[in-house]
Image 1 (tube, one colour):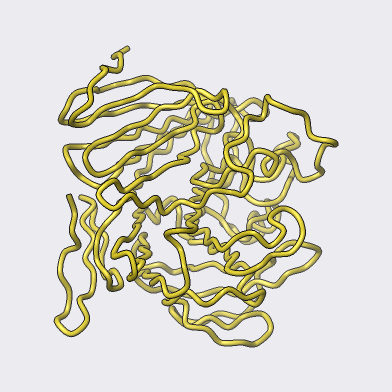
Image 2 (tube, one colour):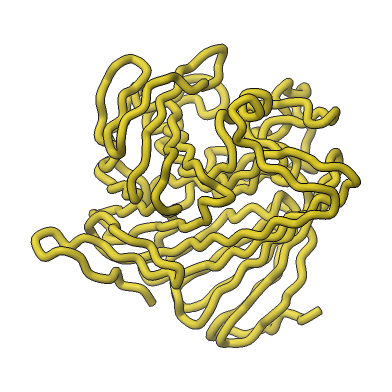
Length: 368
C-alpha cells in the first residue's frame, strides 16, 4: 500500500476524520475532493479552489455519523435519509423505493451508500494522486470498486468503476449516481445544458413519483399539471418546481450547470451504455414537511441504469442490468469544474468543457 505523503504542493492526499468518520481528500491546485470513507465513500466536497465554490448541496442536517445516535424509530423506507448529508452518493444494487431484491429486503437506494468502504492509495506524487475505494455488499453478493484520480492542475476528477457478481447465479440489478447541486452555487438563473434527448414526466402518487405517458423533446418539459417549462434556465423558488422527471434517448452522456453570476460551472460525463437515463430530482422551492421542511433549493442530476426507480416496474420495462456468476462490469465517469458565463455545449473525455460565448459562438472554458 502506498502511504499518503505529507505534501503541501502539487497533487496530494489527506487522511483525517470528520464527525468521527474516516475521510480522505484528493487535492490539487484546482480541486479539493472530500470522500467519507466510512459512509458510502460519499463525495461530500467538490471544491473549485480558484473561486472557492463547491457546487454540491449540503443537507440542513450536515454530515451525520450513523453510529452516533439512534433514530427514535426505524423508518419503513430504510436508513438512507437518517444520515444523508447531501453531496454525491453511489446507489446500488437498487435505486429508489425499498424493495425485495432476489429475496433480500433492501431499503431506499440499496446497500452501498450506507456501508463503510475500504480504500487503498495507489499513487501519490505531485503529478497525480489515485485512490481506490472498495466495498462488498452484505445482503447481496456484489463487490464494487471505485477509483478516483486527480492529475496535474486539472479541474477534473476521473472516476473508474468495476462491479463484480461474486454469487453463483445470474442477478439483475439497478445502479446509479446521486450527485445533488445546491446553494450557494445553485440559484435561479443557473443554466442547465444537456446534449438533447426525451423529457419524461412523472406524477406524484402515494408520496412517490411514477412515470406518465407524457414525453417531449429537450428542453421542453410538460409538468403533470399541464404547465410548460424550458428546462435550460433554473426558475425562481416555487412549490410548482418540486417534482421529478427523467431524460432518455440521450445522444451523449453529459450535463453541465453554469452559474452566470459566479462565472463557474459543474459538469459530469458518463457512459450511456451503463447509465442511459438522467433522473432530475427537483427541489427548487419549499418542500413542506419531512425531510427538508422547506429548507432547500437543490437539484439532483443523477445518471441511472434503469427506470422507473422501482424494481418490479423496471423489470417489467426491461431496463435492469444483469451480471452472470463471476461476471464483471466496468464503466467510467468524469466530473469537472469550469469557468464561463454561458451554457455548455460540450463536455469532453479529458475534462474540457466548451461554453457558449453569446454573440461569438463558443470557446473552451477556463480549464486548469
